[in-house]
Length: 227
Image 1: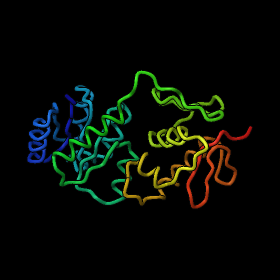
Image 2: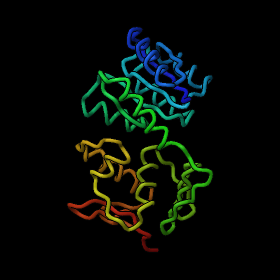
Image 3: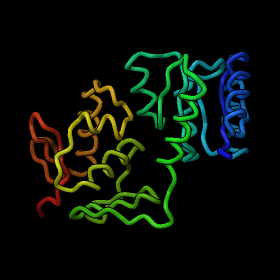
């Protein structure tokens, strides 16, 4: 049975979710605010966290960043904030999924199971190598020219997704759907910004690319590059 930790300040919503998820076979614990949520998550080691953003003591995105700094536990943001900027901000901070209230218990149950499937690691995961770029998905370490890269979680996911498809042109829509989990599109600028950051860390630029090649009007591809 998946262990779900719910961080939600609204007592009515918290009680209803605990009851519904328990009936669906989950083991549910909860916290009413950010700081107890952080402590309870680290102490209880749940399989997944369900996080509201509107917490009384700290914004949920800040808590998400704190969680990401100390634990790889998957996090689903469940909030009433439906603006694109809020969605992108939470996903960039490391959320694995984003669900807008109100939602049904069946919907959140399906999202939990989907995130847990994606985050389940096989016993062995082969390293990804594209030219001098080497990515270890298990340790989440990437290097280029034997130099370890300091990547944010989203930058690592972006690089790994492209490295799993070497030489293949990947559209921004696909990257938004698969890396940012934004299947409805939009927010193309988010991809552009992260590609720009990634290029800098790889030691290249859009005008002088080595590994990240933009195909105008189509997408981007990761190639071996030239010495």
